[in-house]
Length: 42
Length: 146
Image 1 (cartoon, rainbow over the protein chains, first blue to last red):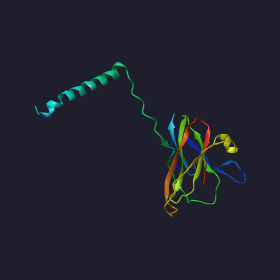
Image 2 (cartoon, chains in turn purple, cyan; image 1 turned 180 degrees about the horizontal axis):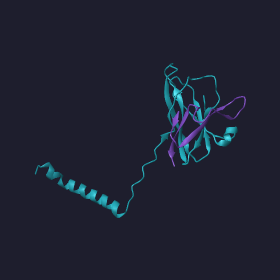
Image 3 (tube, each protein chain N blue to C red; image 1 turned 30 degrees about the horizontal axis):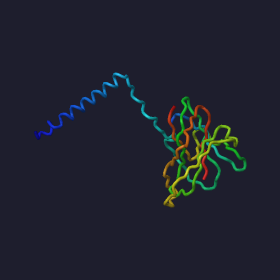
Image 4 (cartoon, helix red, strand yellow; image 1 turned 90 degrees about the horizontal axis):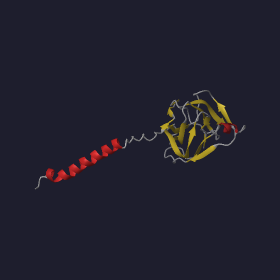
């Protein structure tokens, strides 16, 4: 995955049903959920 | 007097005068040009995907660290297959939300697919945030679940 340079993806994240809460997973830029966002600078 | 150019002379003269006054107004009143409206950009520029999976119904997403300049998130999106039929939720989660705390959620509805081709990726579908969210330097996540 490549992104614009306004921000950095530091890890993926998932919610483990056995351990409620969002758990970081994966490494920097290596994993991501199938999501995106649109932004305006400033 | 049937010459069309002669008939249009007064109109053309008035047009030239109006244009001259318009330009003069900008100079006399030192009018500045308005900046262009802000452009929306998608964050993800390219991706390499694996196979779709259907054995997880929790939230998945990514942790994002905003760079030196703040940005305003205007839309959230999720990748969809042509066969997608479920409404998905997409939301921003504050750092405190990583431990299950409060988050800012929003529902996103997507159209029903018309094909059973499971490998067909349509791309990201987006929905506008009711209120754009300005992010400075903190972490943000964008989970999704069916």
